[in-house]
Length: 317
Image 1: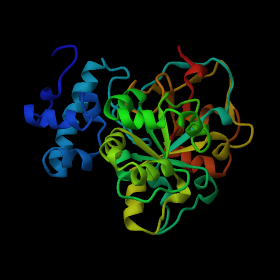
Image 2 (image 1 turned 180 degrees about the horizontal axis):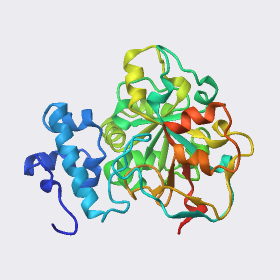
Image 3 (image 1 turned 90 degrees about the vertical axis):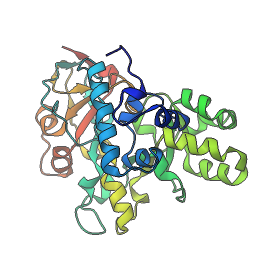
Image 4 (image 1 turned 45 degrees about the vertical axis):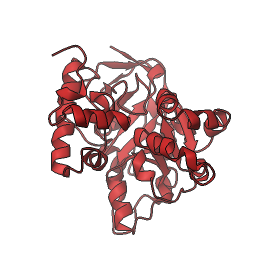
């Protein structure tokens, strides 16, 4: 296999389909490996979900092989585990990592503990759930919604939009996404109400907005989901949900400086998370915290998820 595979190396992708994927912003094997199944099925001339899964699985295998087994495989949705879950993770903390410096991540389905509701209302009010950008299309922008897209893709796929957002980008970095600052890749953050406004005011940018959303990730506040609505619950169940560490972990909890932590560095371009961020499996994080997790919210959420530590807080052992 060549050093960098092309889309045509993926199962079921010929020249015509590869061209279509590139036209819609999926220009690499890795991007196909991380594409949402429904969106991929639509782009592949309406093939079924099962066929789309086979395409994505093929792309993931290729990406993993090219990654050499370290950081090259696409990131699974938070809370799910691949065969690499048991990775020993030779990482050591370089400083004390307080709860406020960490991000707790759990699968969205962990919050759907009863029909139409959640048993974790307090953390839920502070959560941000990540869903594929194209899930924003056709929906009403909710307060606190933020769209994240790599700036190089914004500039390439949407030059008019990039220019329109240039002056507002600094403002968009403040607010609801702030607790992710330590683990978030640099990118173009667009408030949801700005996206909605642009659709109304600048119809000539509609195609560019669609392209950005298909290449981006929407971060929605937990309270913006209607858990009693089946479609919303299904969307949430497939989402990754991020919470401020100090809203979940017990007071005083943290990782001491010099502590060995099990974990794995996340793939470089697989998500909106910064390279070097280390994910500690939740079940093992409980044993590494320098405080008793007790019987509160933390154990239940951590056992189904994990903790993200900033890149500047850990090193390989």
